[in-house]
Each structure stands twice: as C-alpha cells, then as structure tokens.
Image 1: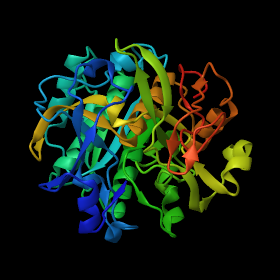
Image 2: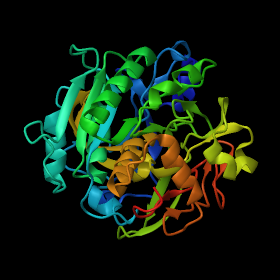
Image 3: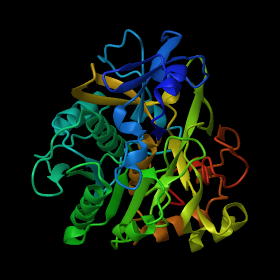
Image 4: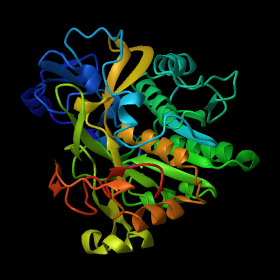
Length: 407
C-alpha cells in the first residue's frame, strides 16, 4: 500500500506524476537483478500504479491493488525481462508440471484481454494452454453484468491469473470480476468465487491480491473466507511493517514478500526479506490457535505474514498485459505481494493436499515450519521496524516455500 500524501511531500520523493501514475526514478544497483534482466541500464523507473495508492477516504470502503512495476526508461515491452516460471521453480524446489482442481482469482473491474494475455504468457513459457475452449479458463462477472474496465486492475488480474497458472499449470483458473473495488463488491465476488470452486464437489483456492488499511469492523467480513474445501490467500501489503485487511484475517493465508539475489551469471545465491513486505500484529484480529506456537512473538493478536514468495520488483516476475495503461503494455516486470498471493495459491494447489479450510492449511504450515526441507527460513532483511530473524517473523512468516510437502 502507498498512502496518498500532500503535494509537498509528493514533490520531495517523486520525480513526477504522469497521468495518474506515481513514477519514481530509482538507481538500480541491487544484487537482486533477475536472471532474465541482466544488462539493463543502471537507472530504472519504478511505477506505482494509481490503483495501488490508498487514499484516506478509501479506508474501510475501497481496496487497492498491491503491485509495482519496474521498467527501463527506453522500455518497449516486447520481450520478458523478469523472473519466469522456469527460473523460479528451482528456487522453490518445484516440479515442472502438476496442479488440479480450481484456483479462483478475485479482482475488480473488467480485464478485456484476459484470455488472450494468458495464452501469450502460456505460449512464451511452454505452459499448457489455458483457454475457455479447453475448459481451463473462465471469466465470470460477479454481479451478472460486465463491469467497466480499469487498466490498473487489469494489470493486477494479468499478474494473478498468469502466476497462478505458472505455479499450477494443470489447475483450472477462474477470474471473478467484481463490479468495483469497494469491499462490498469484492466480498460479493469472493462469495461467487467460493461457490464456483466448491460446485460439483471441487476443492481449491481463492486468491485476493488486494486489501486496505485495517478498520474496526473488519472481523465482520471474516465469514466470507470459510467455505468448506477452500483455502483462501491474501496479500500482506506493500508497506513494510504495516498490516492490511483481508491479509490479517485468521481465515486466510497471508502472503509476504522476499527479494531474490543472483550473481552476474543469473545463478541464484540467496533470498532475503523484502523491505516492502507488509506485516505485523493485527490491530483487531485475535491470535488464532494455529499461531500458538509463535505466541511469544505475536502476543494476543493475529500476526502476519504466514509464508512468502519473491515480491521485490527489483527481482520481479515477467507478466504479459496487452491492455494499454498509461502508455505501457506488453511484457512488464511486476513486484509486490500481489505476486506472492496467486503464486502461493498455485504452489499449495500443486501440493495436491486440498485441505478443508484455511485453518487446516495454516495448522499444517505452522506445525511444519521448522522443517528446512519444506521451508527456507529467511534470516535477513528488514521491513519497516521488523527484521527477518531465525524462526517466524513479521517480515516473511515461516519463510519461503521448498517443495510441495508441509503445505
């Protein structure tokens, strides 16, 4: 999340505001340069989409996306230049195929080119086709009629459907589009998604890469994440050390963010906590029983995130979105915990356990968190006032994924 600031503060930290986007010029001198992005110019543009900015009047009313984009000043978008399914599978010790049942993605507004873009992504990375015709892909309007389009939310949806498919290539993908980004419309879409996943005896996952600052009545919405046979995922947010809802709901798996570090030849070296990874103690949600094992850290409140995935835009993932948005389209490099939520949903789908609830999934994760063959403990990196340390922490939770056991 990026809170909207006063114009004076904007001028201090931003190089410019371009047609509704916050554009920050940042020197890219990181060791986290993606394997597919070697040789880029030393200065890059960090794009914070308008949909990722939370305004004060949005709190408790509207949700925001949690994605960021890195682009070269001479960016053309004609070829992928971020991490790929092939480059990330060995990092997380994942097989090249698998997945079954359903992953539902909930986003706001219409994404007109969703099926086309998912097909381009699949062809580029030799993934199984995922189309309406072969039964793999479905797009549903939550309130029964097509919502208006919004290019920032279309970017969010492109990231979500492509990286759920990347991690679980054989799972069905359903994109459920809410009428707007209001919490009321989005939670209606969650209910629609839950019904679609559970229909005909199916089991699966629902991913929500959006959220907003916590508010006192948030727990009243927790019941939307309790349909039997579904594990719910939500982004932990993109402001280090800050919590968002529904990422703090005890009924969701909260997805945090990491940074990948590669050498000059693109070889994976290490993984650290990402400075933007949302986390901390919930303001309003009490500690669930599956976190009793980390009660000395979280106290009486729900602590987040639960586990994590690459989310730093400087080690970001390749995404294809042909919908022109503020002058950019095509192959983009995305970061943010919006990457982590659908990717982890895909990994859990790939594991094939299909637990009866998020609570069961999280109980399994926390009971296995000390097993180094199942989770990589992230022990360095800082987000807000929190440090990644040995064991569970407010930056990366139990750490990042290793293989398909323990999920």
